[in-house]
Image (cartoon, rainbow, N blue to C red; front, top):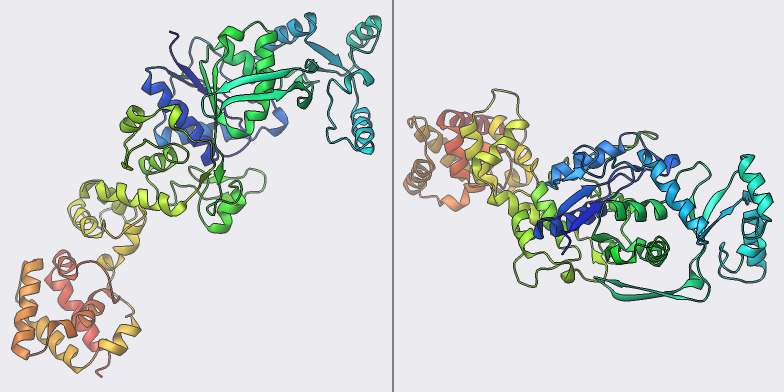
Length: 507
């Protein structure tokens, strides 16, 4: 059996959409599951849509999420080059083979002639206004022109394209690994352009030729390419490669969070969540699109989330490492129905992955947001340990830990108005004095001391806890206060209580 060889073949026309990352992931999982090969091929035949920096963005995105490439533009390999614009000479010979064997033809039609053809069809009420088996014999091409005229046009450098000659009245079938048997009548397929006037191939010819030459065994790609699949089947047949044709698997669409329609960047922007792996600045407009990385998502969590957008393991397990995904993955468990992009589920995955990390690992996120030398790693680890159950994103550590590094300048007025009373002032005054004598404050000592003070004064600790918290943190809620006091230390805690006592009016 031929070893599995898959490819991810994006076009460098902008930032890599998260749907593209999912496509790359499924290809990667199949390759690793079967000890196969993962190829990255850059399909840049449409030079008019080329965007500077997009190719680098694609490679950086895949690296960030942990999708490792075996052969590609950077890694090289036995089928180099892996950038289609550098393979231009390869495609021409196959286009010529198609022409020589009567499966393709030269078309010299101008834009005006093509527009006139579409208008004629529209006027007749035709719903199919394409260059096809029905219209080709009325157009300006090598099927309608004398051979001498075709030769003259080619020799004189007249602009032309090469079109596929789709057979008449034929049903074209293929078996899709996800959708089963797919049948399309040839009347629904137009004579697609295979070679453009600039000598560059279109996607249809280039991807079939490259998939054959690179010995691709499985083509896993988005559902939007399903209508083109019968056309590609014809190309494999006409080029004599039917026995080497890869197996196709067309992935379900990513849907809006409400499940109503295909997910777009506009939908993501409107709902306030990212759609690209990391920040992308449009080189033309300068518009910034925020990425998952900068929004505080972990790459492992994002991969876990993406894997479940269309695929399921058939068990109740939800948390999977990349290695576990490789082990569990099968193309057969990818569904046909569109997958709803539930950003709340993505956040849940991120929470689970953050909670699973060690305190030392989490400390790195906090330290990265602080001035160098302002906090020890040991202290950062303690802070993160108490916050890890409360955070969703990596940047939440810096936000929620702010009070550890800055004494409150303001106090929650709702808490102050309700809880800052004479009992609170009495207890906090005595508590501050008691803490001042403790050199090494622990959470247990802070708790015991408070209990002793409240018992002696006959005031229940429940009545003053929010007032104590607001005096130390400025907020009415937060993480375990006693542990926070241990991290702050007795000197800082006493200072903050005394400042609150002097700042806030007695009620």
